[in-house]
Length: 156
Image (cartoon, rainbow, N blue to C red; front, top):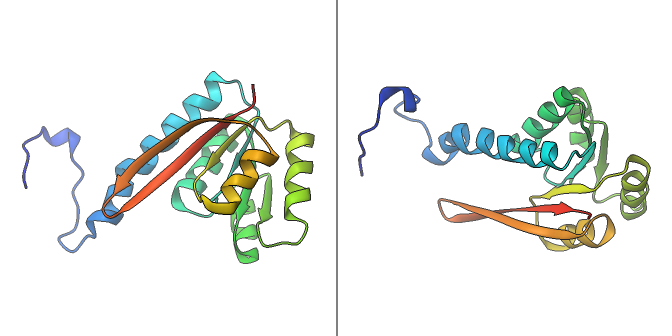
């Protein structure tokens, strides 16, 4: 399939570039712009996010850090903690830690978290919803064969 567009709307890709990976060049930055808009409009000072070690998660950490918004970041592996702290993450919690649920609730209360972006789903998503803030919006976009969902959670 082909479409004709103005050159300034395009980004050159290598001939061997993976189209799904390349789509992140556009999708992730636009997702972050939308998330930062929600954060600004809600005047949120702290944000919780799952999937924090992903490319999108790291972009959100850097954007929040630059805007003076604190982040509580949830990852699956201990090895991801240090990398995210170097990126400017304020708090990094590992979902497999025995004290994870208690620590998440404690940090959300201490830091006044009222907004969360959930990118993982399953039990973790439910834990974030019921343990920290109340559900308001579900946003989803499809990439190839995978449906990627992001929950926007805000406490009213």
